[in-house]
Length: 289
Ligand SMILES: Cc1cc2nc3c(=O)[nH]c(=O)nc-3n(C[C@H](O)[C@H](O)[C@H](O)COP(=O)(O)OP(=O)(O)OC[C@H]3O[C@@H](n4cnc5c(N)ncnc54)[C@H](O)[C@@H]3O)c2cc1C
Image 1 (cartoon, rainbow, N blue to C red):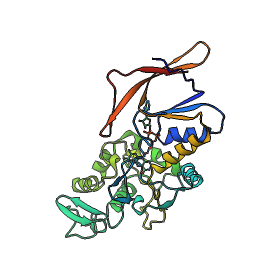
Image 2 (cartoon, rainbow, N blue to C red; image 1 turned 60 degrees about the vertical axis):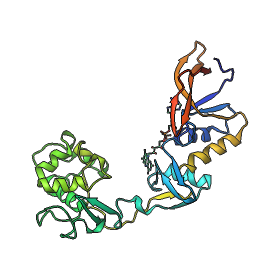
Image 3 (cartoon, rainbow, N blue to C red; image 1 turned 30 degrees about the vertical axis):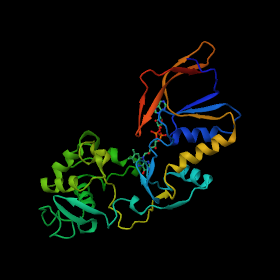
């Protein structure tokens, strides 16, 4: 089935990227349509609320950002007038974070500090908070302190004492060369947020400076939930022109280029049930040029 409408610009996906693009282009006097696979806006910015508790955001995707690093995002949130608040859990692991490790419940600031509560049989030299142990591992077993290249590229240049560059070995290999098996277990089993700790290139994990003791960097979030950002972008986009449009439950299947440099986009309709979106078995292919 052919859709007779003809877009000047088709944006695929109503996540933050798609809605931001639409928002930026909104005043260009073009017919712009956003096509979204699912039945909602936001993609991996997805905020839910428990019934009756609207003030607690349950972030299933993005939950926080750092204004000094994510300048464009911060500027956009300010322009949209969304309420920004601190996100205290966003900077590493908070001291009050509860852990359950090796059958023991303990607080973050007890780990590597309280001998009786820390369920790892570490030597006196290796018994310390995880980040301090990691830093000592790099400081004592690599040339991180004497490598003089700029910090931004240091991770690629640092070598272990045997002369092997970090990017040529896994982080497991570095740990194996440097610390006891129990200390390796300690780092891996207490680093749930560091998915890269076990299987990746060592260069991704090198610490180039000691762990920070002060929490000077405060992450931020949007009080109304992170998916308020794409929703607000979309609202302003749609309000700017009656020619702008959002089409949910449309899956871009294919694109072809015509001889006149226009494009045909082929969509399948999708269906969302209980939060899961699937392509309809007998869906129509529509196109827009
Ligand atoms: C658990 C988790 C935690 C995160 N935490 C943070 C965080 O704290 N801070 C942070 O900054 N970032 C975080 N991120 C990353 C952040 O959420 C993503 O980088 C960002 O949301 C990606 O936006 P996007 O628009 O590029 O893609 P998406 O959000 O994935 O949007 C893409 C959209 O395109 C649609 N789509 C895809 N293919 C098609 C097609 N063929 N046809 C039609 N539609 C299509 C999808 O359905 C989707 O809605 C996190 C991500 C996850 C998953």
